[in-house]
Length: 116
Image (cartoon, rainbow, N blue to C red; front, side, top):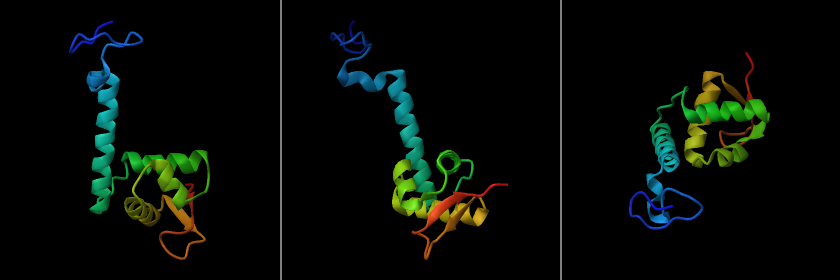
């Protein structure tokens, strides 16, 4: 098979060579999602929390499926900068979506889902 962009022979029947792989639909979807997540992190750092956003949903889903979790583990699982995670988790606690137990300050403790 040949690359749709440059005509070079591709491997394993791919439509794009390594130099043009960013043109395939899947790569575009991944890049778009990453850009959206970066924009959401920037908004969180400015103090604008979208409670319908991807990160809030990811926190809720992780706590629903896995259960109570240390904040330090959760922010790494989400691939989120620590500063943004602190702001997000504090806002989620204030909103009553999650609780922080065993914490002396905002960066410690275990996060638990608040069940309604």
